[in-house]
Length: 283
Image (cartoon, rainbow, N blue to C red):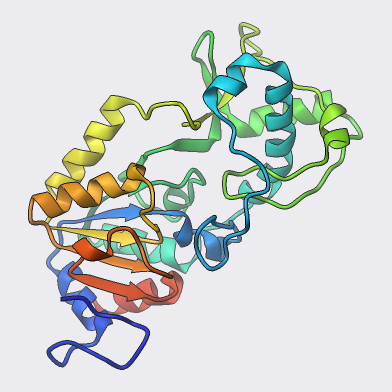
């Protein structure tokens, strides 16, 4: 059965939220979250109702490692975008998910987001499918350091440099060429190698062990709950396909249709913060 939170209709006399609560109450739930869960924290998404048109092509791994100019553009844009991403706080949706995990109803969270807000809300088992912007990795010595440390070094290397622009979900900002040209990039403080955010770029593969961990979480779940993901790309949709093949019930809470609606037993087109808050209160 598929239900909608957008109207008064219910199935078998139950409201959509009541049906979702019944599904989650049994525990053993795996969560897959996407950008729509973080929009209420001030981080825009690309495909939801608050999405903004992409005004620049996303950075690819090949361009990043092959061009000093591409790296300068990336780090200038990311340096500005980090001011918003780094200061973002978990919203009611993140807090409700962490509460449900703490009560033993959620087994783990696979997130497509790179903002670290699930962990900031107190969630414990979080698999960051695409990595996290709060870390930086050296492509030569593989040392990982904090983004805060890098931001301090970038400010020191660029005294007086100021820029602003529209923030993208990837954590960067749209900047003019003249702003980028004045920006200076820093390299690894340990070996002088190239620094890259610890996230998966386009053209780069998610580590196989991480993908396997996500599949294992989904396969061992009693139900799969999708939160704020349009499921338009294989990165997230593959876990829905896996759950459906195993006969695991799928519920989706998102604003707008998703690529997994046909596989779901329950869909709610509703704001995530208030919906998940009410869900936690029912359980």
